[in-house]
Image (cartoon, rainbow, N blue to C red; front, side, top):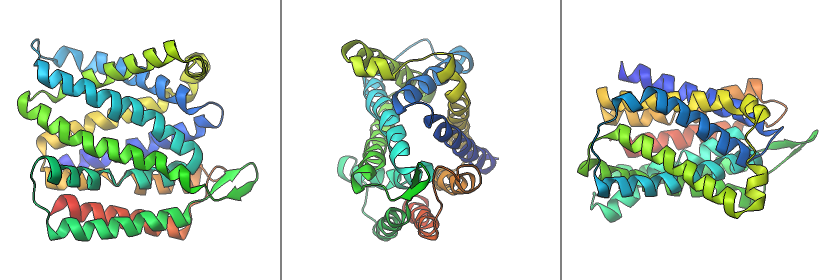
Length: 290
């Protein structure tokens, strides 16, 4: 049952990202970030609020506020910007290394052991990321071009922030074991970040327009992402983490399929990209499953 839930969540993520990639052609990464966050918060309010406990832990709340701002709010902006520059499949494959970052952060901050599988998985993951970089190609108009190397800093920075954030989330959940509260607080803090940026930056305010057109472009992607997240939560709750976590990284594999069949005019799926994505997935499985 848990395996079916997490595979379904990865499929939803892939569908959502593919939908958002198409929407970005007519809009921008800021509008996509703000619109999807609003859509997800609405879903959370309907689905999760009746289940939330009435008491909070101040220390855990502060951690969730922190991780929400950086690993959700900032990451959403960087992820969609990376998708604009690199394409959906390449961006997702580089971002998929975040468990590697999380594992090394846990070694440094939580005193977890540096195992042979972690080292081997690291090598395979790095090789996979190199192949993804070599095989990436997106269309600019009618011509195919290779993205600049600086564009890869967007998904990699996302991976660093998300991988590190999971360690802090673990600390918060050890103190206050209410994941639903963390989900709600992180989305609210992300919306607060966007409100502040919109107030202090004219460019952000101009780009973050939320209207009927932006909802038309991005609401489907937002719905898929938040339901994928909720399914993952329940998969972790009822299944074994060692089985569930590696399966979470099947999203880039599904996304390769959708990119090949539905994003042909936006990006190209090359053999090197496929090999790199599979290599990254294999490396992450070694790191997280054993």
